[in-house]
Amino acid sequence: MTCISLPFSPDAPWLAPLAGWSDLPFRLLCREAGASVCCTEMISAKGLIYKSPGTAELLATVPDDTPLVVQLFGAEASFMEEAVYRLQERGFQWFDCNMGCSVPKVTRTGAGAAMCRDLDNALQVGEALVRAAGKGHVGFKLRLGWDASGPDAETWRTLAPELAGLGAGWLTLHPRTAKQGFSGSARHSALRELKSLVSIPVVASGDLMCAEDGIRCLRETGVDTVMYARGALRDPGIFTAHRILWNGGIPEKASVSAILERIRHHAHLATKLTSERAALLKMRTIVPRYVHDIEGVKQLRLDVIACRNWEDFAAALQRFAAFHGLS
Ligand SMILES: Cc1cc2nc3c(=O)[nH]c(=O)nc-3n(C[C@H](O)[C@H](O)[C@H](O)COP(=O)(O)O)c2cc1C
Image (cartoon, rainbow, N blue to C red; front, side, top):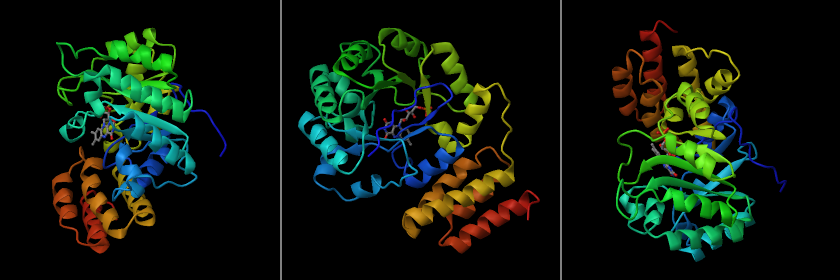
């Protein structure tokens, strides 16, 4: 496989790892809109090795889905290392270690954000991943720490330089504590500090809900690039808007007909690349996000939730289009 390097530049925004969402169809949609790098959702290293149901689907990819970062989670260095070897056999070459997930199902196992409660182990995992992936081929996605105060606060200050010293290729920081989850606001000033603390690329995450947020974050913090998460789920066009804004232009707000076109295209990609049933379920949940701020969304939400098949789905979109005077 050709070894290309990952782009770390302000005009090359990334799609964040999004459990349940950053699947192959969504990644392709985001790439078409201008995402430069996409991440898979977090994948359990143990699940991958023991071939847990569903893991194979999470790794589905196609040649256009490049460059792709596979995100792994796990608290045991040996499993994380082995997972990378297995993935390399299948041609994957970029990896990310989830040290930020605050969901109890993950942290209970010592993985995700719980890694900032045991820094020795976090560094052992880091070392094993770099050994397997090769220097520069693995990134680490961090939170500020476990809590706002106490022994596990602000652990990013210790972890970041240590991981960089081990050979990490980049660091991503979502500057909230694990305890915060998504509450409060992301402390972007920590990103600026991180940038001055390490010499490897820094990717910003957190409260980047629109392209303007991303550009502001880049300008205020000096990070190398940003990754969009919830902002991309609302509007994959965020990547197009980002590139236009960064280059001094003014992005246009997507029209209702452009949004409907995007929905139909997403449905097409989802049916082509996943099962009919999975595609319909996914579309039923993503459509309300895509139209969240448009008049008529309440009715559309009810209509798509009630969809049993693609005919119902097409009719729901048609009704919404008619409401907006579109045929
Ligand atoms: C639905 C959802 C799923 C997520 N899944 C993951 C994941 O699998 N791995 C990860 O590192 N972060 C995950 N995150 C966190 C995001 O990647 C991102 O860091 C976070 O949402 C902050 O960015 P935002 O405020 O711009 O959305 C997820 C977030 C959301 C909303």
